[in-house]
Length: 263
Length: 312
Image (tube, rainbow over the protein chains, first blue to last red):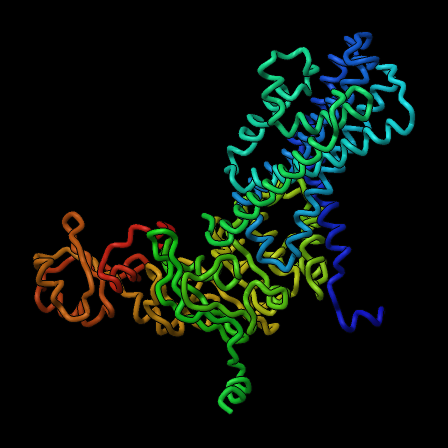
């Protein structure tokens, strides 16, 4: 019917769109992914944010507002690390990635889909947290502040997508969930994403300066006026370097995979 | 001139491994191996587990790099998209994303190709009717294998790679897959099959390449290969000494099994005649076909522990 069919070509935008759609559906239908990544940040927020909603944490910022920023950070990191890290590790280990590599799939479509999915899940978590905060938490912020906080939280997914990708190439398919949890949970706690960092012991506050999660949270807190007063650029540079290092590590893993076989 | 002549006979080489060696650490998976796949043929790479069959397929698919030598696919580097849009591969995949439905997997993989096969044809060919809306995780082992077969065909490939396609399939599913492959070949496609079942290679292939420990052992038509590798098994109760019997012409192996003696022979009749001449009191005579396991034993002069039991 369509005269263009006479010279068939691949529809690249359609490949990217389908890859992203099915990456999302694949994980959205998987309780083992949805429950921890979506429910845990929301549950913790309800537990701590709403219980201590009248406490003032930093300056004039109340707990309900403060914890939107930190649990938003926590949730976005989780979506990226589990989506990328566990996803890549299992698909490598089970031969699925090998099959995909034998198809003419553009490799970038695979990674773009995983990034899209992580960002979309991050967006869902952030939207749900904002809704909880604005309704049950009584959080009132200027529209621009909501937007800038949301923007920082979503952008912060990218460094952790890169880190998740690197983890996916170095963790085994069966151990990946455990490895990701062992990195994700302690580093979130030490970065003050569960409990405001000023309530943590001094040495942990020092340690946090070397954790990317802390720098991500610090930028988010700045957006709601709960920052430490220092400049933002140091955290931006830290996260930029973290992203670059993660991508280099992922590339080494990718190259290593090309040289060997599985099973 | 010569090339034109070959093309006219439909023998143009579309995939090729030239003097390929592949090492994984200490292990040499393939050792200076040559392979040329001609348009329209079904070639079976036959050998026990660990022979290097899967390695050969992965090199031709551009999934791993030769340690030395070259791999070409339709005249391209196997990793080029121009080559990959013309092939399909059924690999040994242990798990496919389980929450996606059969129809969804097919839609996604088909999108990678410029001229995909119609989904309805694919479903029919792979025997997946009625399972389109079933998530992969809810399929039986045989059904999963058929989905992998369908995914290999999404692009309506000129060349199809089947790496141990019927592993774990019941007899009925195996026959179904064989007839689907035969139908594809009638449509002019080329197939490279790896298997450790001689029966499967015999049923599908026009040419068999026998591999053992990364080296080419024998090559020829199924009839030629069978004549070389498939001997007969002669069993009997006899007073003759095994050591003497092993020296008889045409006897390639043998053993004592309790009271009885078992011999692996190329052709049964002359050996049986000789046995009866030497021992008229011979009893319980039995002649059977020998399996691939015995064939490898005969060809390599060593017991093959790696061969799958079901291959026997």
